[in-house]
Length: 96
Image (cartoon, rainbow, N blue to C red; front, side, top):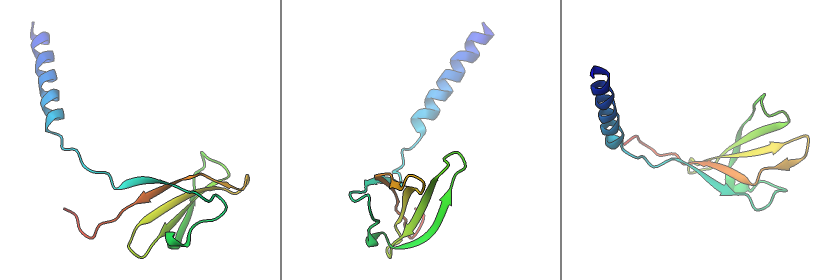
């Protein structure tokens, strides 16, 4: 009987917790890359090139434009190709 009461209490508390969570807008978006032969100059300056051991041959090129928008383009140097989805991270000037 006590276990049953505890289970009901836990379910009620979890339900209340889930209902009280506020949804936030994401700062990360995706954009299509139309020309897979070059990277638009509008993306700004190349800030960094990173790689991940789990994805051999692939690198991520990180760009930052004059308004502070960060874009990440995935490139495979071995196969000489790019992924057509670009990750966009919008930045704001202050935390709300």
